[in-house]
Length: 282
Ligand SMILES: [Zn+2]
Image (cartoon, rainbow, N blue to C red; front, side):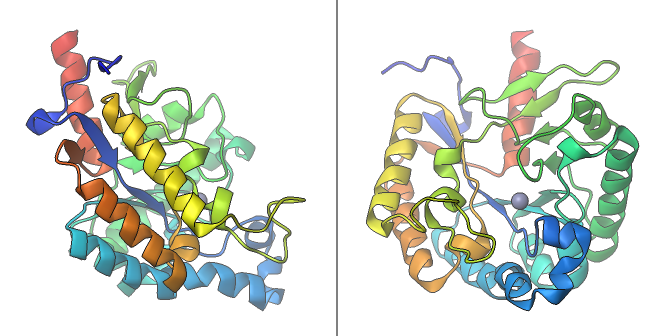
């Protein structure tokens, strides 16, 4: 099938895979309103991600020599700095994901600016990096958010759903914000999250079959690569970095790398390449 987007990926590759993980740690209303401090079970469900699952996942990425982007709430960096430094040391990207995983949809522009400034300071202090990417926590954002992001020096976001290729969001007074859209089908929460309290997903099966989940991911990947598109993931170390699920990821990575026609890149590299393409086209 011809590429509908007419994208010419680097190195003559047919499609682009931008593996991405949301290293959330403890999140949700309980985190935001402080009640998490009287919910040790829920706290440890979140803390398992940076404290325990991340290392296992980094080892697997190293085995396959795959680059990845980690969207990390800055609160997680403050509390597990050693673990987060390992992400950077192993050549992966760390990008913005709120301070305590706030919903940007619920924040005023001033509050969004404050979260971005605080996060930037923490990333610089603990990791020595200037982050350039952003994924909105909890799904949506305000009309003001793209401008807040550009003012904070952000070059790209991976938050929206409207395409399966990168695109540009115009922001008055700034160069455009590159968007690398994701899809719920590539969110491990949708098939593998098991939490007793809160009940998620409400009324649904608690987890899907691991074999079917792998089959779904592989079909999404093959479809996107066959059409010459860009696929990213919304995987969470606390969900898919557990021992049984890491075997799923191992099979998925083996499937991905068995094709020779895929450009594997961090999201910041995808965004930089796309901006260059736009300038040539324009
Ligand atoms: Zn998240």
